Image (cartoon, rainbow, N blue to C red; front, side, top):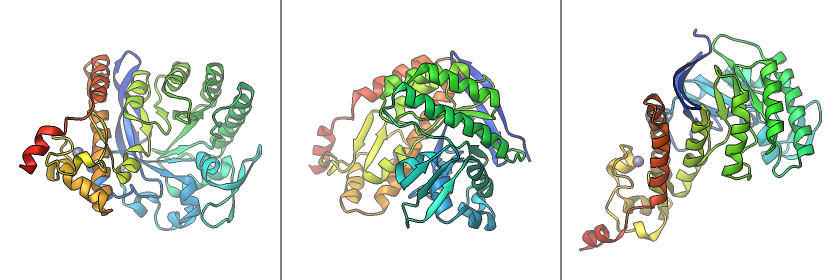
Length: 383
Ligand SMILES: [Zn+2]
């Protein structure tokens, strides 16, 4: 079994291209994880998700501890076997979901007790418990339990919250049971305050982790503030460990974060949007429910090799969403995942060739261009 490792093969200013190796294979960075919250990439077979280029899956401790239960998953052979995902799996600690989904949570120095959003049953999540659950799941990359500082928060509130997360990080490190190829990541917090972000980075570095996440962003602070926080954090993290920006984000957020030295991402956006009819393209986002696609015989994106673009028209995708057919979310999820993975491939290649700045400028310009005109083609199809 391989040991956990991170190898950087190229840099371009602050950006890095590399490869993370785990007990269940490796993934290229900058990487975008396929969101598999409840041990499934919604609307996708795992092999199809993989075929888009996704090498890393992200599962959710909060959801899986409540249903089907971590002990049950362990008894059934662990998460990889349970969900038929043979590649690396990262699990988040559940802290964020406890804050956002559960009722009647009670946060203390020891941890958090909460009522399940499913059936109202009472549960407790402590740093040690979060480590135990992720161990039972068999996660390749385990995340520390932290408190996602709410936004907005005063500097004093953000400092108290961040320092508690740092005390929990130490407890997580103590409770984590090392296994070959399995990693534990610490999570940087500190709200929108650069001094707190720096203090948090130093505290995590002192404890020592296999990788470092930047948490508590994309919670309403805006892109400019998010980029400033990455700039305040990344230079204080070890150069030779992967950096993971949690829950981000839109394509242009990802490009900006890669430019600033981030290696790993996850976000529900491509899969969630795929289920509601929103498509990500090189020329911005499209709503396939929009009437302008009703008679359009062209593909969503003629340069995209995904099944939605290769075999179907915009008119058909529009029809599927209007008729609420299951194939609509399936095809559009596939396309969106492919778009995100193609973006990551492009970023990796650009870093390798030392032209990330030009790539980022070109990508932003195309996103701003807007969709192709609906006019001519539509008339031709009807005529
Ligand atoms: Zn496509």
